[in-house]
Length: 89
Image 1 (cartoon, rainbow, N blue to C red):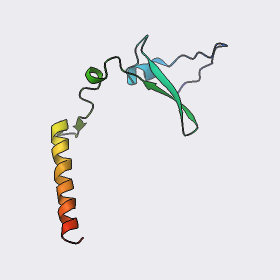
Image 2: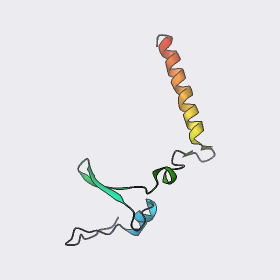
Image 3: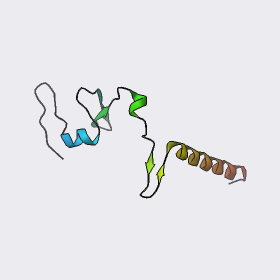
Image 4: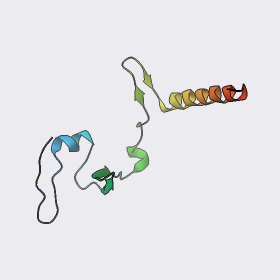
């Protein structure tokens, strides 16, 4: 946690550890908005398809799931729920 001062022009410096953690780069577009009474900074991607590749990977200490595997798992779960509904549950 750090305490920063806003300039007279309304400018603030995002601490380096947060820029690194969230992948913020110089000259990158960001969206500044309000969410539940707080100011939020949301990074925008230059190339949304390229920059979001791989974000659906879910990791477990011993297992890595791909997006295809997650979709398959969710579909199987949905089929199971549908069959329970058909059985009267």
